[in-house]
Length: 497
Image (cartoon, rainbow, N blue to C red; front, side, top):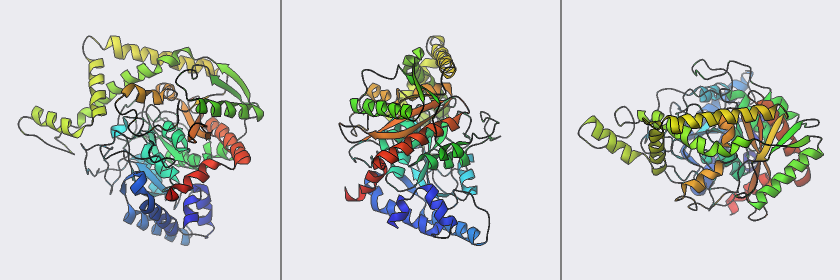
């Protein structure tokens, strides 16, 4: 059973297809792992043990009957608790939803069910995806498997921690300002933000509708690509869904080759505020790509420095609108008495956490009469300039690279009372969300100061998601050849810590 939890999704798929192991065995091994370590990691808010076992038996019966099955059939997947799922609660990490059971299934989780994947449970997250550490969860923080005193990143921190701690080979997250790539980087795994519109938002509880992008997390580049391919594609239920073929991400992940590829290093993502060990690993990764035949050049994107303030006007403004539906009247928590306004005020005061309240107030202010043009309007103009920076850059190079996040995982509680310090964790990831193009974080080594993982971010134009996997697979292969991938090996030691 220990061997099953350390196998990749691709390896598990091959073993089940060959008849060497059953989906029931794979599921049970991961449920046992959750029982053994999640009391310390706290990655899961709900473990769907009975449902997972039942669906694993169904997959085994279908395979025995000779049905053709896809590559994720029988593979456990952890689901960020932002996706609506029938038969499981969906809390968004918030007490205002409590034990709410949605009456409909998100498009992406339905696609995974149709593919035979085993949805093993719902993972912890920053409340309504607002945060970079998972400390804003209404149910307490998750912990980084590399060091349980450190954060696993956020807002998809529970999903990242579950994968890094070998409780699931794959997980779903969402990326609004870096919420897949940042936790992937600090947990030493792979995390992808697909092109906006490339993965359906139907059934994904909205934070910021023009930014939210579901994406995969896995321990290897190929695993992330396998999940990316199954979860993606046009969805008529989502008005922002792109009606275009899914880029050939799996093929790219299987044949990583950067010879002749033009790679741009973003000059604005350097300088003060970056941990020396993170920058050292990033520099080595760039040199590695150059040694593999890539053509590396520096690229300036001058408006990227305005991305952080622009994001923290646009995202809270959209959150202010989206979260108005949580009023104590229709579902979830209801408290207080009196008029509708009094019940709403009491419910929102009791149900929302401090960070959600902060962003609602920021967004409401930015949208208010007399301030809309000065704040929200200006932020949208900056967004356009950032898109133009990307367009100009991709006219010169095929992909851009940078550190995925300025530092490694920081101690739980260190930034809890300093919102600005917390927001800076997403400094490198926010521009991609504002522009809507694709990006990935792939492990690139351990920082010298603390021995914790650092991530390399690769950014590609819209609908060129396959380029991400081409570069990431080349980095991963070279990393494995030189160092035997100590990132994966180290995370196995959680039970002995």
